[in-house]
Image (cartoon, rainbow, N blue to C red; front, side):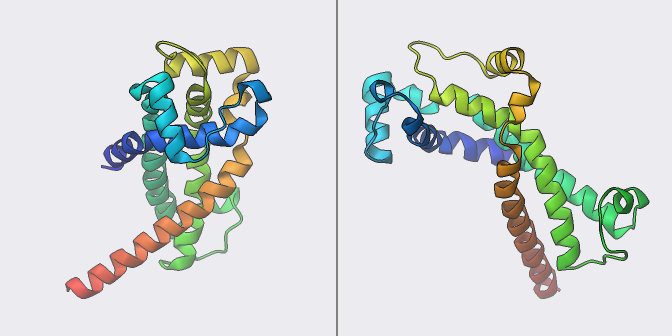
Length: 196
C-alpha cells in the first residue's frame, strides 16, 4: 500500500517537480543557457510549447521509484526499529545512544522515526540524484532511462556521487518523517480510544 500510494502521488506530482528542479538550478547555469521561467505556470506553459507535453513527466520513473522507496523505507524501518527499541534489543542500544527502557509513547516514536528517516534518506538518495539529473537535462527526443543515468553517475563520478548531499537531505527527511509518523501514531491512538 505504501508503494502504491507513493507511486501514484509521484506520478501526479512529477510536472510540478520538473518545474521546481529546473527553476532551482537555473541560477547555476550560464546566462545563455538559463530558462528564466517567471513562475511555475510559466514553466508548465513553456515546457509544453517548447518541448512537448510529455516533458512534464520527464524523469517520472525515477520520481516514482524514489517515492516507492521513500514510502516503503519509512514505514518498514519505522515499524521494525520501533519494535527493536521497545523490546530492548541490545544491538540497537549498543549501536545508537538511547536511554534504556524506552516504552510506548512519543519518545519511542521520535527515536524510531529519526532512525527510519536515516534509512529512508540512504535508500532514496540514488533515485533522488538520478531524478534531478534527468529532469534538468536539455535534450531532444527520448531521455535516457533511470538505470542508465544511475550507472553513468556511478561510473563517471564514483558511487559516492549517488549520495551527494546526504546530510542536508537527511535534515529535510528526518524531521518530515518524525512529524508524519508521530502524527500518524497519535491519530491511530485516538482512533483506537474512540472506536472502543
